[in-house]
Amino acid sequence: MDSYGLIGYPLGHSLSPQIHQRLFGLEGLDRPYSLLAFPPEELPGQIGRLRQLRGFNITIPYKQALFPYLAGLDGRAAFYHSVNTVSVQNGEMTGYNTDCIGFLRTMQSHNVRLDGSVCVVGAGGVGRMFALEAAREGAQVTVAVRAASRAKGEALAEEILQKCGVRAQVAASETLDAPFSLLINATPVGMFPQVDACPVSERQIAQCAVVFDCIYNPRETLLMRRAKMLGAQVVGGMDMLVWQAAIAHEIWHGSHFTPEQIDPITAEMEQLLAAREAQA
Ligand code: NAP
Image 1: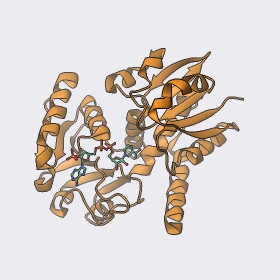
Image 2: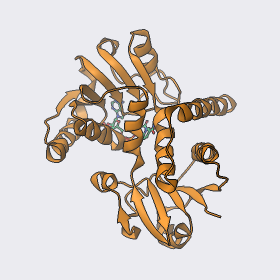
Image 3: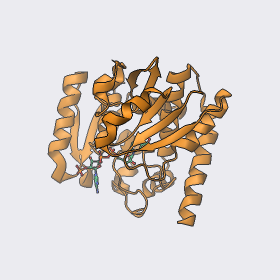
Protein backbone atom coordinates (compact mmCIF):
# COMPACT_ATOMS: atom_id res chain seq x y z
CA MET A 1 0.00 0.00 0.00
CA ASP A 2 1.21 3.55 -0.76
CA SER A 3 2.60 5.26 2.34
CA TYR A 4 3.13 8.94 3.15
CA GLY A 5 4.74 11.03 5.87
CA LEU A 6 6.32 14.23 7.13
CA ILE A 7 10.09 14.53 7.57
CA GLY A 8 11.66 17.10 9.88
CA TYR A 9 13.52 17.48 13.14
CA PRO A 10 12.15 17.95 15.71
CA LEU A 11 8.49 17.44 14.76
CA GLY A 12 6.76 18.07 18.10
CA HIS A 13 2.96 17.96 18.05
CA SER A 14 2.45 18.34 14.31
CA LEU A 15 -1.14 18.48 13.01
CA SER A 16 -0.05 16.99 9.67
CA PRO A 17 -1.26 13.39 10.31
CA GLN A 18 -4.75 14.64 11.23
CA ILE A 19 -4.95 17.07 8.28
CA HIS A 20 -3.73 14.48 5.76
CA GLN A 21 -6.07 11.78 7.10
CA ARG A 22 -9.01 14.13 6.51
CA LEU A 23 -7.76 14.82 2.97
CA PHE A 24 -7.32 11.09 2.23
CA GLY A 25 -10.90 10.67 3.50
CA LEU A 26 -12.16 13.25 0.96
CA GLU A 27 -10.35 11.26 -1.76
CA GLY A 28 -11.89 7.98 -0.60
CA LEU A 29 -8.45 6.63 0.31
CA ASP A 30 -7.24 4.89 3.45
CA ARG A 31 -3.46 5.44 3.61
CA PRO A 32 -0.85 5.58 6.39
CA TYR A 33 0.76 9.00 7.07
CA SER A 34 3.62 8.94 9.59
CA LEU A 35 5.78 11.49 11.37
CA LEU A 36 9.40 10.72 10.39
CA ALA A 37 11.65 12.68 12.76
CA PHE A 38 15.41 12.16 12.41
CA PRO A 39 18.47 14.40 12.94
CA PRO A 40 20.28 15.88 9.89
CA GLU A 41 23.26 13.51 10.10
CA GLU A 42 20.85 10.61 9.43
CA LEU A 43 19.40 12.08 6.20
CA PRO A 44 21.69 10.15 3.75
CA GLY A 45 20.80 6.87 5.46
CA GLN A 46 17.05 7.66 5.30
CA ILE A 47 16.89 8.29 1.54
CA GLY A 48 16.29 4.61 0.65
CA ARG A 49 13.31 4.53 3.02
CA LEU A 50 11.94 7.82 1.62
CA ARG A 51 12.10 6.42 -1.93
CA GLN A 52 9.72 3.65 -0.81
CA LEU A 53 7.02 6.20 0.06
CA ARG A 54 4.50 7.50 -2.51
CA GLY A 55 4.89 11.04 -1.21
CA PHE A 56 6.04 13.06 1.74
CA ASN A 57 6.08 16.56 3.18
CA ILE A 58 9.13 18.37 4.44
CA THR A 59 9.71 20.83 7.21
CA ILE A 60 12.74 22.37 8.93
CA PRO A 61 15.66 21.51 8.54
CA TYR A 62 15.20 19.61 5.22
CA LYS A 63 13.62 22.16 2.85
CA GLN A 64 16.98 22.67 1.07
CA ALA A 65 18.91 19.63 2.33
CA LEU A 66 16.94 17.25 0.10
CA PHE A 67 17.94 18.96 -3.16
CA PRO A 68 20.89 16.65 -4.02
CA TYR A 69 18.57 13.61 -3.94
CA LEU A 70 15.83 14.99 -6.21
CA ALA A 71 15.48 13.86 -9.83
CA GLY A 72 13.28 16.85 -10.69
CA LEU A 73 12.12 20.18 -9.35
CA ASP A 74 8.85 22.05 -9.88
CA GLY A 75 9.11 25.69 -11.03
CA ARG A 76 8.01 27.26 -7.72
CA ALA A 77 10.39 25.02 -5.72
CA ALA A 78 13.26 26.16 -7.97
CA PHE A 79 12.14 29.82 -7.72
CA TYR A 80 12.17 29.71 -3.88
CA HIS A 81 15.00 27.15 -3.64
CA SER A 82 12.81 25.42 -1.06
CA VAL A 83 10.96 22.09 -1.21
CA ASN A 84 8.14 21.15 1.17
CA THR A 85 6.49 18.31 -0.77
CA VAL A 86 7.92 15.34 -2.67
CA SER A 87 6.18 12.99 -5.07
CA VAL A 88 7.89 9.61 -5.56
CA GLN A 89 7.40 7.61 -8.75
CA ASN A 90 9.41 4.47 -9.52
CA GLY A 91 11.80 5.47 -6.74
CA GLU A 92 12.50 8.90 -8.30
CA MET A 93 11.77 11.94 -6.16
CA THR A 94 10.38 15.23 -7.54
CA GLY A 95 10.30 18.32 -5.31
CA TYR A 96 7.49 20.90 -5.04
CA ASN A 97 6.70 23.96 -2.95
CA THR A 98 3.05 24.01 -1.87
CA ASP A 99 3.39 26.87 0.67
CA CYS A 100 3.13 29.47 -2.08
CA ILE A 101 0.18 27.86 -3.87
CA GLY A 102 -1.42 27.24 -0.45
CA PHE A 103 -1.11 30.96 0.24
CA LEU A 104 -2.62 31.88 -3.15
CA ARG A 105 -5.53 29.42 -2.75
CA THR A 106 -6.17 30.77 0.78
CA MET A 107 -6.44 34.28 -0.61
CA GLN A 108 -8.67 33.10 -3.49
CA SER A 109 -10.98 31.18 -1.16
CA HIS A 110 -11.58 34.41 0.81
CA ASN A 111 -11.89 36.55 -2.35
CA VAL A 112 -8.81 38.57 -1.33
CA ARG A 113 -7.05 40.25 -4.25
CA LEU A 114 -3.26 40.49 -4.28
CA ASP A 115 -2.91 43.21 -6.90
CA GLY A 116 -3.40 46.21 -4.58
CA SER A 117 -1.13 47.71 -1.91
CA VAL A 118 0.21 44.77 0.11
CA CYS A 119 2.28 45.13 3.26
CA VAL A 120 4.18 42.06 4.48
CA VAL A 121 5.39 42.37 8.08
CA GLY A 122 8.49 40.17 8.47
CA ALA A 123 11.15 39.21 5.94
CA GLY A 124 11.93 35.64 7.08
CA GLY A 125 11.16 32.39 5.26
CA VAL A 126 7.43 32.80 4.80
CA GLY A 127 7.50 36.63 4.57
CA ARG A 128 9.87 36.39 1.60
CA MET A 129 7.46 34.03 -0.12
CA PHE A 130 4.38 36.23 0.55
CA ALA A 131 6.17 39.34 -0.72
CA LEU A 132 7.42 37.64 -3.91
CA GLU A 133 4.01 36.04 -4.64
CA ALA A 134 2.27 39.40 -4.12
CA ALA A 135 4.78 41.11 -6.44
CA ARG A 136 4.19 38.38 -9.06
CA GLU A 137 0.45 39.10 -8.79
CA GLY A 138 1.05 42.81 -9.49
CA ALA A 139 0.91 44.23 -5.96
CA GLN A 140 2.69 47.38 -4.80
CA VAL A 141 4.64 45.68 -2.02
CA THR A 142 5.84 47.15 1.27
CA VAL A 143 8.14 45.00 3.40
CA ALA A 144 7.92 46.03 7.07
CA VAL A 145 10.73 44.90 9.36
CA ARG A 146 12.02 45.95 12.76
CA ALA A 147 14.20 49.06 12.41
CA ALA A 148 17.18 46.98 13.57
CA SER A 149 16.58 44.48 10.73
CA ARG A 150 16.33 47.04 7.91
CA ALA A 151 19.12 45.30 5.96
CA LYS A 152 16.98 42.15 5.71
CA GLY A 153 14.09 44.18 4.35
CA GLU A 154 16.38 45.87 1.81
CA ALA A 155 17.76 42.47 0.71
CA LEU A 156 14.22 41.20 0.10
CA ALA A 157 13.29 44.36 -1.82
CA GLU A 158 16.38 43.79 -4.01
CA GLU A 159 15.34 40.17 -4.64
CA ILE A 160 11.83 41.35 -5.62
CA LEU A 161 13.37 43.84 -8.05
CA GLN A 162 15.68 41.19 -9.55
CA LYS A 163 13.06 38.42 -9.84
CA CYS A 164 9.84 40.36 -10.50
CA GLY A 165 11.10 43.65 -11.93
CA VAL A 166 9.14 45.77 -9.42
CA ARG A 167 10.38 48.11 -6.73
CA ALA A 168 9.17 47.33 -3.18
CA GLN A 169 9.15 49.82 -0.29
CA VAL A 170 10.89 49.01 2.98
CA ALA A 171 9.39 50.35 6.24
CA ALA A 172 9.91 50.02 9.99
CA SER A 173 7.21 47.83 11.55
CA GLU A 174 7.31 49.80 14.84
CA THR A 175 6.28 53.08 13.16
CA LEU A 176 4.28 51.75 10.20
CA ASP A 177 1.48 54.21 9.37
CA ALA A 178 -0.03 53.92 5.86
CA PRO A 179 -3.15 52.57 4.14
CA PHE A 180 -2.95 49.05 2.65
CA SER A 181 -5.49 46.90 0.85
CA LEU A 182 -3.89 43.87 2.54
CA LEU A 183 -1.59 43.55 5.55
CA ILE A 184 0.06 40.18 6.20
CA ASN A 185 1.70 39.20 9.47
CA ALA A 186 4.67 36.95 8.63
CA THR A 187 6.31 37.20 12.06
CA PRO A 188 5.80 34.99 15.11
CA VAL A 189 4.53 38.04 17.05
CA GLY A 190 1.24 37.06 18.76
CA MET A 191 1.90 33.32 18.57
CA PHE A 192 1.19 31.08 21.57
CA PRO A 193 2.28 31.56 24.36
CA GLN A 194 3.02 35.32 23.68
CA VAL A 195 -0.63 35.91 22.76
CA ASP A 196 -0.74 39.50 24.09
CA ALA A 197 1.67 40.78 21.44
CA CYS A 198 0.71 42.50 18.18
CA PRO A 199 3.18 43.26 15.33
CA VAL A 200 1.72 46.67 14.34
CA SER A 201 -0.17 49.55 16.02
CA GLU A 202 -3.95 49.91 16.16
CA ARG A 203 -3.57 53.11 14.17
CA GLN A 204 -1.98 51.00 11.41
CA ILE A 205 -4.57 48.22 11.61
CA ALA A 206 -7.35 50.79 11.20
CA GLN A 207 -5.93 51.61 7.73
CA CYS A 208 -6.10 48.03 6.38
CA ALA A 209 -9.00 46.61 4.37
CA VAL A 210 -7.88 42.99 4.86
CA VAL A 211 -5.57 41.44 7.46
CA PHE A 212 -4.07 37.96 7.01
CA ASP A 213 -2.21 36.59 10.04
CA CYS A 214 -0.28 33.47 9.05
CA ILE A 215 -0.05 32.39 12.71
CA TYR A 216 -2.42 29.47 13.36
CA ASN A 217 -1.87 29.08 17.11
CA PRO A 218 -3.94 30.71 18.59
CA ARG A 219 -6.81 30.51 16.10
CA GLU A 220 -7.49 34.22 16.61
CA THR A 221 -4.48 36.43 17.38
CA LEU A 222 -4.62 39.86 19.01
CA LEU A 223 -3.93 41.34 15.56
CA MET A 224 -6.96 39.49 14.14
CA ARG A 225 -9.21 40.55 17.04
CA ARG A 226 -8.21 44.20 16.68
CA ALA A 227 -8.60 44.09 12.89
CA LYS A 228 -12.09 42.57 13.21
CA MET A 229 -13.06 45.22 15.75
CA LEU A 230 -11.83 47.95 13.40
CA GLY A 231 -13.91 46.58 10.52
CA ALA A 232 -11.28 44.78 8.42
CA GLN A 233 -11.79 41.43 6.70
CA VAL A 234 -9.69 38.88 8.62
CA VAL A 235 -8.09 35.58 7.54
CA GLY A 236 -6.19 33.23 9.88
CA GLY A 237 -3.16 30.97 9.34
CA MET A 238 -4.88 27.60 9.72
CA ASP A 239 -6.49 28.10 6.30
CA MET A 240 -3.04 28.21 4.72
CA LEU A 241 -1.75 25.25 6.72
CA VAL A 242 -4.62 23.10 5.46
CA TRP A 243 -4.49 24.43 1.88
CA GLN A 244 -0.75 23.74 1.51
CA ALA A 245 -1.43 20.14 2.62
CA ALA A 246 -4.35 19.90 0.17
CA ILE A 247 -2.09 21.04 -2.70
CA ALA A 248 0.24 18.11 -1.87
CA HIS A 249 -2.70 15.72 -2.46
CA GLU A 250 -3.51 17.51 -5.72
CA ILE A 251 0.10 16.80 -6.79
CA TRP A 252 0.15 13.18 -5.58
CA HIS A 253 -3.28 12.10 -6.83
CA GLY A 254 -4.53 14.75 -9.28
CA SER A 255 -7.38 15.59 -6.87
CA HIS A 256 -9.01 19.01 -6.70
CA PHE A 257 -10.41 20.48 -3.49
CA THR A 258 -12.93 23.30 -3.07
CA PRO A 259 -13.18 25.82 -0.21
CA GLU A 260 -16.40 24.03 0.84
CA GLN A 261 -14.32 20.87 1.43
CA ILE A 262 -11.36 22.61 3.06
CA ASP A 263 -13.18 25.01 5.43
CA PRO A 264 -14.58 22.26 7.73
CA ILE A 265 -11.07 20.74 8.06
CA THR A 266 -9.69 24.15 9.03
CA ALA A 267 -12.38 24.54 11.71
CA GLU A 268 -11.76 21.00 12.98
CA MET A 269 -7.99 21.55 13.26
CA GLU A 270 -8.53 24.83 15.11
CA GLN A 271 -10.72 22.99 17.62
CA LEU A 272 -8.17 20.19 17.96
CA LEU A 273 -5.41 22.70 18.67
CA ALA A 274 -7.56 24.56 21.23
CA ALA A 275 -8.38 21.24 22.98
CA ARG A 276 -4.66 20.31 23.10
CA GLU A 277 -3.84 23.68 24.66
CA ALA A 278 -6.59 23.36 27.23
CA GLN A 279 -5.04 20.04 28.29
CA ALA A 280 -1.46 21.38 28.40
P1 NAP B 1 11.45 33.21 10.30
O1 NAP B 1 12.11 32.78 9.05
O2 NAP B 1 12.13 33.01 11.60
O3 NAP B 1 11.09 34.79 10.14
C1 NAP B 1 10.48 35.51 11.17
C2 NAP B 1 10.42 36.98 10.80
O4 NAP B 1 9.72 37.65 11.86
C3 NAP B 1 11.76 37.67 10.68
O5 NAP B 1 11.68 38.62 9.64
C4 NAP B 1 11.91 38.38 12.02
O6 NAP B 1 12.66 39.54 11.93
C5 NAP B 1 10.47 38.76 12.29
N1 NAP B 1 10.25 39.01 13.71
C6 NAP B 1 10.50 38.17 14.74
N2 NAP B 1 10.16 38.76 15.91
C7 NAP B 1 9.71 40.02 15.58
C8 NAP B 1 9.23 41.12 16.33
N3 NAP B 1 9.13 41.05 17.67
N4 NAP B 1 8.82 42.23 15.67
C9 NAP B 1 8.91 42.31 14.32
N5 NAP B 1 9.38 41.29 13.55
C10 NAP B 1 9.76 40.17 14.19
O7 NAP B 1 10.02 32.50 10.45
P2 NAP B 1 9.04 31.99 9.31
O8 NAP B 1 9.36 30.59 9.00
O9 NAP B 1 9.01 32.99 8.21
O10 NAP B 1 7.64 31.96 10.10
C11 NAP B 1 7.03 33.16 10.57
C12 NAP B 1 5.66 32.83 11.15
O11 NAP B 1 4.83 32.26 10.13
C13 NAP B 1 5.68 31.80 12.28
O12 NAP B 1 4.77 32.22 13.27
C14 NAP B 1 5.16 30.53 11.63
O13 NAP B 1 4.45 29.69 12.53
C15 NAP B 1 4.20 31.09 10.60
N6 NAP B 1 3.99 30.20 9.44
C16 NAP B 1 2.72 29.81 9.14
C17 NAP B 1 2.49 28.99 8.07
C18 NAP B 1 1.08 28.54 7.75
O14 NAP B 1 0.90 27.61 6.95
N7 NAP B 1 0.07 29.15 8.31
C19 NAP B 1 3.55 28.55 7.26
C20 NAP B 1 4.84 28.98 7.59
C21 NAP B 1 5.05 29.81 8.68
P3 NAP B 1 14.11 39.74 12.61
O15 NAP B 1 15.07 39.46 11.53
O16 NAP B 1 14.08 41.18 13.02
O17 NAP B 1 14.22 38.81 13.79
